[in-house]
Image 1 (cartoon, rainbow, N blue to C red):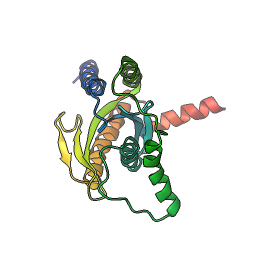
Image 2 (image 1 turned 60 degrees about the vertical axis):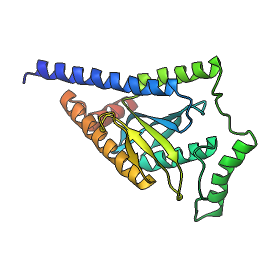
Image 3 (image 1 turned 120 degrees about the vertical axis):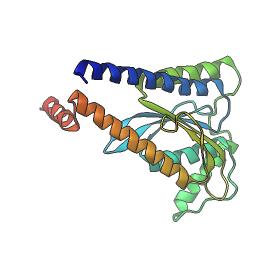
Image 4 (image 1 turned 30 degrees about the horizontal axis):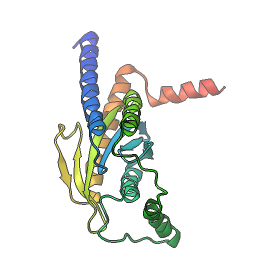
Length: 214
């Protein structure tokens, strides 16, 4: 295959992924279900994905770096917005961490958690603006639906490019972590191949940064 054909194929693949991602992001624009989390992957650092979590009930996307932080923040968002409800209280090693987590629901009860209104043109327009900004910087998107939070964990389903846009159910945060690990590995590998083909590697990036700093 010639370089020209290879570049053409890569461009076509990139455009197809972009269309799929935009379709996924538009799901958030049409729903008022607070259990849906749209995960917008912006890039990777040291084989860990980073990006933001977009949720209908939050006025701003929530940043994350790494799968551990992603899963914990999804749970914290659920606790903040009050759905799905926990079936039992989580356990912690330190009292301050327990109190910090409990404060998420207390803030909601006292009205401290600023939630986006489910009705009204203003709220829908804000969400549309957020998604438009995310489309410009998101390299891959996946949808996570949290349906239940039973047995001190979470249950739901996930849809992404790796699942061929089909929903795959998970019965615990551990199963979700395994699925997300597959997504992370695939994203990092695709990113490595793209950089190798373009000749722009991490080594060159570091050299450029050093050059600018001098």
